[in-house]
Image (cartoon, rainbow, N blue to C red; front, side, top):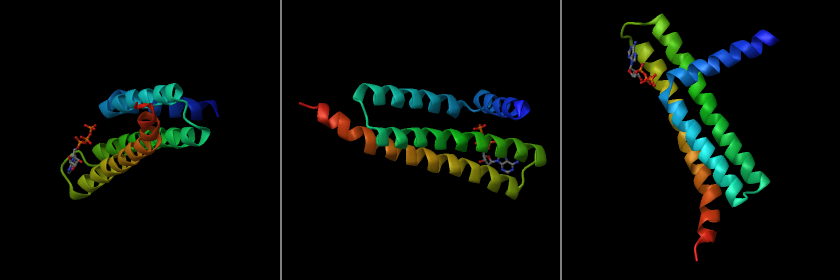
Length: 116
Ligand SMILES: Nc1ncnc2c1ncn2[C@@H]1O[C@H](COP(=O)(O)OP(=O)(O)OP(=O)(O)O)[C@@H](O)[C@H]1O
């Protein structure tokens, strides 16, 4: 049980160390949380924001796993290696696009309400 947490933590740490995008996404997530606190978003809106943040983070960590296994299995160019890496990148893109949509849906009305 302890090993499961330690190994999972190592995997997340590796993803953070190797993926520059994950650091940028963490900064954006911190901004979203700060905006949520300042703007006083509702419980339901927090649910959407937390889910959006987690979906992006999960997709990046899974993409890191795909990239590592692909590099191990196919260090040389191969169409299946390309398909695997492209699909992993596609998953991150879809998750990021969804989180931008969630951010607009949640925060735009609060920000518009601040306008004079
Ligand atoms: N072994 C390979 N065979 C075929 N195509 C590859 C291979 N490795 C990478 N590619 C192609 O190059 C693209 C970029 O690969 P790369 O390993 O740089 O991934 P990346 O998403 O840029 O990773 P990172 O975010 O860690 O820089 C892949 O999406 C894929 O299309």
